[in-house]
Length: 373
Image: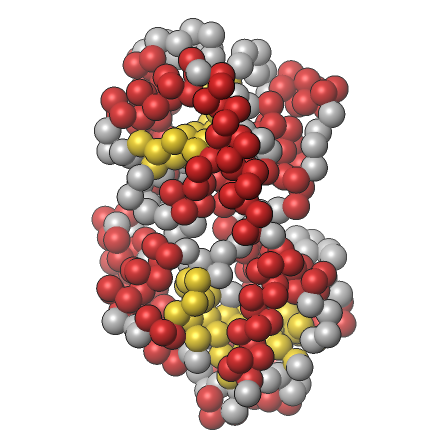
């Protein structure tokens, strides 16, 4: 069976949606080899997915489609899919093109989250309108909606009134590099490179209000714990200034580090050397950094109220993301109780077995076969 994918993000996006797209395509190629998987993308010039077979990458063919690639993804791609003999099309990033049913092509869309609906103040009004149109239309027109968590499934039902029987929850896993142990020498070299000199708490994620790093820094400051450092890794935004202002006003420059442009290949060592991984985001669709921590054997402190308890399961403790005192209290428990940290690591190892590529690829192929009949 020939299955097509909207793979723009796999070849153009270094973070969330791109990581998901690459994970899904790689899992299918690795574990479910009896089918053909075609990746449709306007461009492939960033070398983000070198392992994907060149002969399976499909780009716009006509002069007009190349020039109007956004419209190609939105509409005219359906004719190309028909000509390529695609039986099922899977939109990996919240949208599918128009005209699939008219071409007798079955469709699946993955909805990652509806954060723009849950936290509207964090998004521009025009962006919310565009996202709502794309996401809601995709949910209505697709044969099946994949939600990446039970939380996202609940949001789709509550906000877009999609029938629950149309939605399937299929989890995801993180980049395989997080499953490889870094040796002691490599860890030491990387810690020295970034000036990390003490036991530390790690947080990885874009520095933005929704990710809640300022409250994490405030909670860390409340501890008065001079034996630990807090290391924040992530792309800077306007919100970063609020964090750096708090650090400066409270003389935390030697205890709180902000690192940017850290290569992915350095991250496994930084996760594995951390005593605690903290991810107290106010709202998420899933929470891949939590899986990265669990694969690294690092206990997790995360947040209540969205999907993060699903991602971390018994491998973490959970705090109210709006209450600095609660975050600080949970951090203190993890810092002072080595046995608690060890027990969380062991529980986390069992929990992440449900997120393997082989398991997820099998779920997807079963779904594809079901709707193809």
